[in-house]
Length: 594
Image (tube, rainbow, N blue to C red; front, side, top):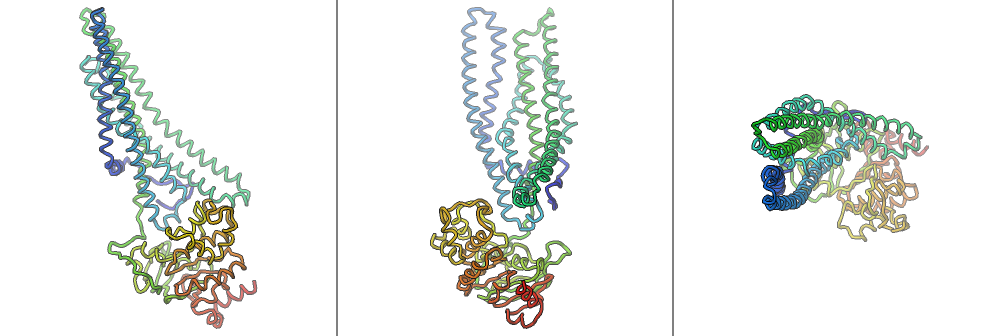
């Protein structure tokens, strides 16, 4: 999917791709047994129902003229009809249960594959797409397939079988009447052929407009504080109404194609039924009387049943065209290449000792725009490496490459002499603790948030980690302490509190390599001083990378790298860099003056 925002439509295949339906068959296959049983039960129920017009013809033409002698026969057929009705009701219940289970299981499996893929996709996938457009594929589009999978497939097969069985009964009753009915099919097929392409494109457009609307809703919710701060409510409502109106217009345009088929079927059904009545009356008035009243009634009953499965097949076709549009975007997500992944011969990362080396590393987020330019550095086991420099210089990119959030463009990154691209991502990251600049808090208790990176941690470990980063005091004062529930993104917590909780989360994992990206940027000076004291003990014997704008927090680092324009322009200890009176010295002086 190309880079886009909430008001840019997604590009889809303009041609009907049957491969999407075949791929869906992969998800259907595990439940084929239950679906086959459901199909058999539904076919037997439909066959039973189709006997009723024959019974009616028999009663009218044979048993009613017999007078009282025909009453036992009529009662027998009525009794059989009641038994068949009970059987059909029971079968429909069983069939519905089987199909609902199968359909929802398929939906669950499909959604699980989409979510699993989203967990593996690299950061640049999310950087280039509105999150609302990603979300709509996982939720709305998959849900829209539910009815198709729960009922549509089996019912369509049953309708096809029923159609041929009904035609057989109709030929049995009167072949000339049957030919009259079949004359309406070419007209119906012509209508379907004329509208199918426009109908599919209309539903593709509607799904794209729905995606745009969902993307803007997600963006607006995430940015509501900024919206209200800058009094943008009225403008945002205008944008929302425009996107909502576009979706409404696209949906109404698409649905009108769906509404063409049912009235067309009804019209053809009325015309052919009228012709049958005219022909039947004429035959009854003729001397030959080659048809009976019962046969006409039975045949007209079959006519209504004949067009019902055709209407259902038309509705299924409508649903299928809509589903194809959704499937294309669902499978597009599943097919999205995972750029950052394990090699086929990747091995488990041995227990990390802590030596990290960048050898002539180059990297670019976009072709032709380098972010790191031939970067080389060596951090020995247990050392603290601080990285400073102007915004956009490439500081965060260095730790992103170390964490394998992106692939190295050229050169290599080594941990304990092992190229990190030769080991599995999971075994590498499990031994690293990362606190990114964005302190994300998940919905749940504070305890669960701290325990996120080490699920088996005891309560004492959680509280000890919180105490080290100076979070224990404010957590203990909350209404339920560590069991206090916080919402997504920690809306009830201050920015500094969220950072401390995220810091505790990273420390609890007891990583061999600790990465702190602006870990103290939102913490007040008093808390920061206390935090620094606790960290000194924790960082002993542990390799750590610290990105910071406050130089006061990194003066004790074993080495400091000044990064500018994708290159390391200065390196050394705090005292060494001050002595050089270069970039670091100027930055230090500017902060002291501030």
